[in-house]
Image (cartoon, rainbow, N blue to C red):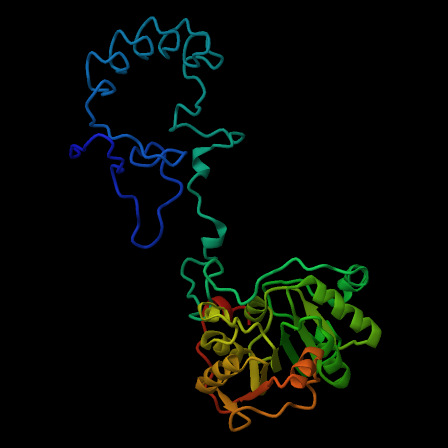
Length: 381
């Protein structure tokens, strides 16, 4: 018997919270401790007063023989045992005979597949939370898609007519669809050549110029913003570039799912969002866990090249990259800008105003121990 409560006490009968997660938004059917659909908690069953259902003289008491809505009242037309009830499925006049069809009132019977409130569907977990293999070991670096902090904000930018035309005409040829399986670079580019991944190419001008200057290397650019993808497609057409492809998707997922281990000759991360505010630093792309994942995709001797025009972010990059044991710095601290990285128009403007630009060039050690693998991602690489 539950403890008595003062009138107005809205505490639920039971605490449905799970120490491992939030309250289940879909409580089991018939659970009197769950809240109503409107969010208001149910009234405790032991309150006293006119609405107390245990009061024998209470006219709303379901067990009161004089209650007209009492289902056991023989004169109640909705009485399921009333043989004269035409809607009674179990009565002699019911359409299904004595046994009657199972329905919402009979939870033990089969559910109607056309019923949108089929109780059997209320507690099916989301496919996002169901692992493909119950015994599958997760990669410790494989962050949960629902909990991972994204390093970008997807904004709906204005697309010019030329960018839209490039997306429609050139997209099917140069934009690779995201698939959770490693790409075959030889099949994509039609040749065997070193492959470089660029993360976040913006409007793509520097990317196109690098690809044009290095025709012996293949490039895969990753960008989520559609105007930038359209702009780079126009540059591909203008420069007749055959060694450049695009994936319009989150670079973290592309790296995890579409890039095989030790397959990249280089990774470029030029001018990522610095997230200036201290409370947003957790959104910065260059973090220890992400760098550890980058290393797994670099071939021994492969290059990781980062650049930023925000000095506090450059300091964080230097600290994080230097702490990764599988990477070696090619300079004492910051490296001079390599010849293959062209100056962007924003960089040129910043240099005129006296702003600094910091390049960091690290290589994966040839003698570095292979990183720890987990079956969930190693099976894709």
